[in-house]
Image (spheres, rainbow, N blue to C red):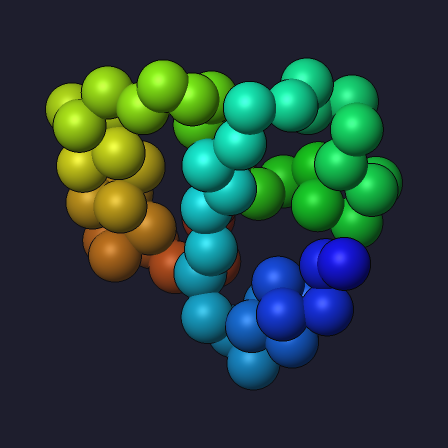
Length: 61
């Protein structure tokens, strides 16, 4: 289920999850991946993407 996210992370591509499920549902390997809850607010998405562009390895929630 998370194979694409794992592959992107392996290649060093920053990712963010946009989900309607609780963060506790995500596997432990994704604990440092930023997660936005639906419904998304565009300002929150832009903030996270800007942070990932500035520091691709930093991520963080």
